[in-house]
Length: 268
Image (tube, rainbow, N blue to C red; front, side):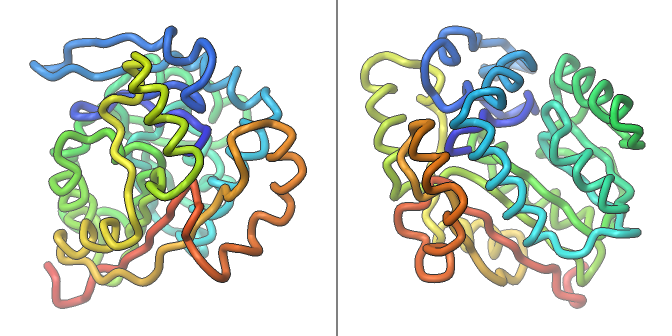
């Protein structure tokens, strides 16, 4: 989520605005959800973000990295946790996956349905709590959470649920904001200046993401970084095409971190 907003409104998630800039924070609003407050983002905010120079480049880079770590998806059953307006879910479906997207925001689910329909893709969509997924054990091959767990009040519980619903040998991919980046500094500054959108966001280190995955009984495989440029449109256009170069060397400075882990066959 360096620039992209967290994607939806799962119970236990507080959703931030696109890039944490401009009117995104002001357009966000607090809602009560089963006794918890969450920040919700309108689908229109996602659309505005992706139309910007910064958003168009950043969103594509994040999505490509998460899909790469998810591996070949043809014929796989994929769960998108916090699917938002369905960009990742539809992208996975175009790669031949059988996709289920969950979110707690009816508006986001409606936007995801509209996106899937307009692109001729079949995606199963369901309102659900990330910490209590309504699926039997071992229902999926891959579970993905992209820019959503950063706002979960109990991320450990959500990842345990993701681990529970994948098959032994399956993969879990998490993509969330990195702590050691210019984007994180900018967002913390905005929060100190009174922007409530980012006050509940969690910024991760690679070690913390690996620890989160291990806490669910998963075996971490790798953590990759992305979005090494400053949060301005010209920088995204200039450095976006070569953003993969520092990825091979370090995660330091990456505004977005993506971690992948697999479920050991011995873990039921």
